[in-house]
Image 1 (cartoon, rainbow, N blue to C red):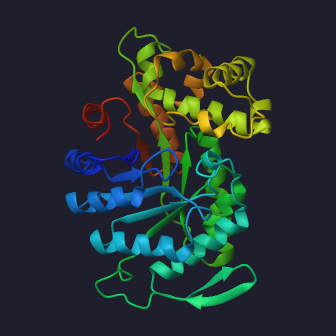
Image 2 (tube, rainbow, N blue to C red; image 1 turned 30 degrees about the vertical axis):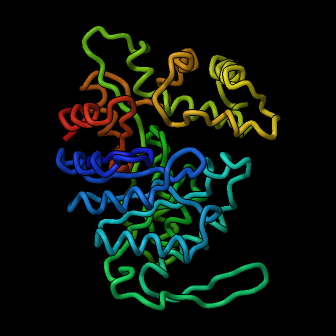
Length: 348
């Protein structure tokens, strides 16, 4: 299985991308959460100049963040800097919208937005709508401005069959976050392939899994502080989602639901506070703070991290690959350069 890296946008990102390429990683992704992190298009433009081979990914953008023409111009500009190396993930904005105190967009809007991006980045015309008004738009100046000749790879952020079917209808790949159950990936793949066949699209595209990973030393505590520090950023993001999505919280086991209450207490907010996003997303996907370690209960480690001995993790990765995952994308958290070097030693 291929391995990639995902990071938050910040100054110095290009140095980390160059190091990831040097170590042999396949892709380098940047989150798109404007009120939490820096701008991914700015960061990846610098990464494009500091690299020559590694794929560069947006993980993921949303129709609620930018209009299709603006997003396509950004993608086309990146594609001019790194021809044929750009991957664009598109989702409903589950995080990017909630950090604004808003709800994610509907699946239909995700589908129409992604289709418009596919058309524009390939130099085709597409519909552009503002309210009741619709017009046909396309790039008017291409040469030297944007690259529409080399293809941009698109992937849709999917957690269930409904959005996986969108990927099939549009002929895109898929990306998901901390979805470690091989059966779930098999179901996503079946839904995508069925929709692709119905639409006459290729059934073979790429699937990416954003995850966290920790290899245990002999006799090391599976639930110790070192493990929590490696996987805690994703575990805490699951608790944040439980605040935002009552149905998701209702399905949590008791110890995880209690951790949600502790999270709210630490953040000084409530699940019904309309301004909860001001504190709930503090340090989102950043290094786990000491005070947050208690939130990472054992079941969260088991669910949201790839944790085990080298042989155990190897078996988990093999099972995911067999179920359809092509690339595992890991976020270094505390010391990115050292963690990338260790990941390269273990996985490449």
